[in-house]
Length: 203
Image 1 (cartoon, rainbow, N blue to C red):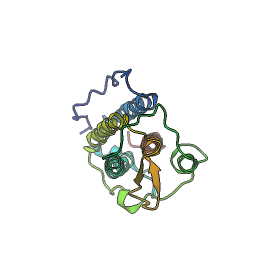
Image 2 (image 1 turned 60 degrees about the vertical axis):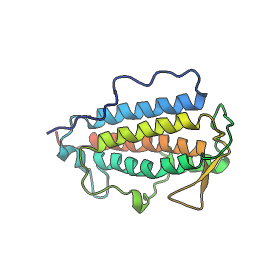
Image 3 (image 1 turned 120 degrees about the vertical axis):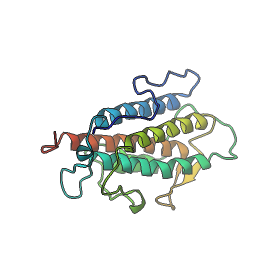
Image 4 (image 1 turned 90 degrees about the vertical axis):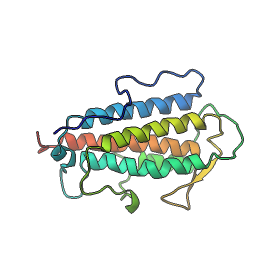
């Protein structure tokens, strides 16, 4: 039995361009749309065996990559959202991460050969076996991410900070947090794609 999407989200159409959105909002929404499309192309049609196949010991399967993103977003997005409560309205046109935010993204999040490899916090490590419903879960999470971006449009995302739920001593800006969510997805979707194209992947 192969996987299909039952989320109700139309995967054949990207979100319409919203001209009233600041540039950073439109860009992030487009990135989440692209992540939905990539996840759909990666997962739809896979059998349970293919979804859970691992190219090596300790290397995540396609399903584990998606489940990791789901768990992370389900913790990270509410932390960002709650930081907006009671803050004054003061929109900005672009996200400008501080020096530490830029360093963290470039060294630990951005998918590039220069990125450092780090173990995921235990609370967001995926299970040994992943259910096919992980795709719809991922799509629902990204819908929540788009809604949060639209909500944050009215705030100064370069000044409001939130407590990092994984490393409590860190307080990134809301803008940096949203950038991390998008680039973290890109990183692990690329990892899932490498797994799917690995030698030995069941056909």
